[in-house]
Image (cartoon, rainbow, N blue to C red):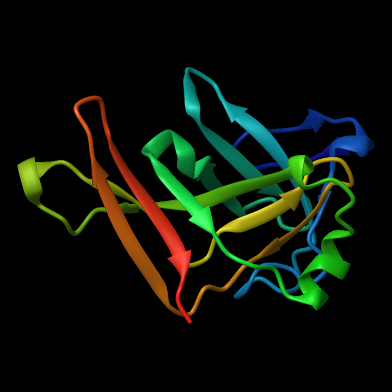
Length: 154
């Protein structure tokens, strides 16, 4: 399948690798088909390209790479949308954005949208954006690393 991207140019992709977001992503509800690309030269960041709008691209990453771990429950509707058969098939990603207004060290910083993780059934290639209205964070300080647990508040 041929796709167009303002960022990658013309690409040939395998249609079985398309990720469907049946409800779109909040703010982009009409965008339902995406392809996940590796960010060349950066093993941490992936790029989620809309197949319906060649100018729409999200930088995403696995939250665990930043020592962020989620604990939340999917609603029955979310479970039905994702068609989960095996919990091991679930992939969680966070959308990243540059904070160019931040003048700390005169370099832009990258922020992750931890309240709105993408939840993807990697086996079925179906995703949604989970809205966590109340986040409770706990930080575990260890000699090796800092871990941040993000749990859905009651």
